[in-house]
Image (cartoon, one colour):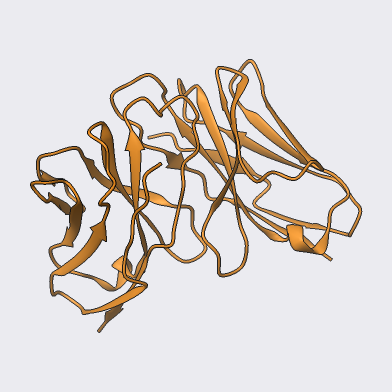
Length: 113
Length: 114
């Protein structure tokens, strides 16, 4: 899998938007960009994924650069429950038959009340 | 909606003992992944199965083995336990072959080796 780089940590105030960046300069044309998050003592949780176009769901938005070498996960209004480690992971479309899935290091998001 | 089930949720063992962790994937999911997460670390891929066959292998010690059964549940067998095996063990399931590759994770089994 192609490599991703993320900031080690970020802080946000509650109810403010959060933009979590991810660089993936070696992304291939068939790599999907996935975001997962892990709350303390819980299993990782799917957040969102996309290929080329920006994506929205009830949890977050994913903004993908035109050259696809970077992406940004956007939490529109951070809550205390959004404090977690956020992982940006690249997956080739063909890698869904049990191939290796690489986590980390992600961004530890702290949300301040 | 049904989620991934792992049992037991907590397990305490002595050094050199054996342990068996179980994972029940979401119904109709045919692919299972196992991960180990040590204290303060990121999840590390151990092994995966697709349609009851091993599909990929990561940093799984030789003391560990795993299999996927006909009902798609999977078991991770750990022998000669060491202190360093103390960790959270997650499994995740996927419906392979689709356009999506979303892994659904279980709540994990916390293994403590004394």
